[in-house]
Image 1: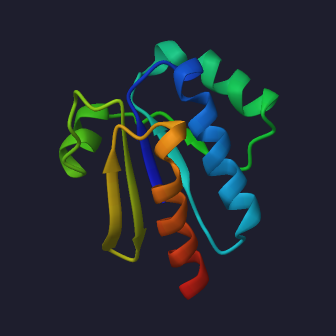
Image 2: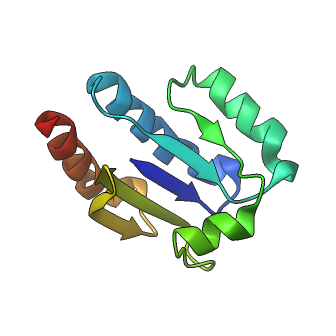
Image 3: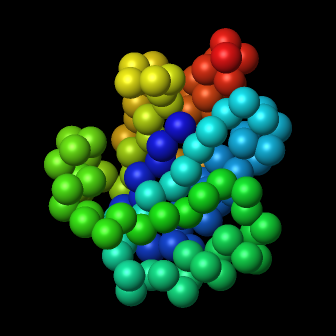
Length: 115
């Protein structure tokens, strides 16, 4: 699972925690969170990882625009989730909130259970 986050770190913290909980619950599930905010949020990202004792990797791409172009991300979206295996995307969602994260979780569980 890939999660692209295009908001400030505190606003994304609850979603990141939900992703991390899925990864801990389903060992076959692999995920990482890509922050589109750039290096100015690096300290906040490190605090989030340390404070939350996160297992899921949190990254900042070196070349953000290439990442946006490669994954065809909507620059206005708060976040984009891709649940995939290999090169096949099974589920994608934009502007996910903690309230509607269950759809992402269901897709991730389905992929984790098929490996």
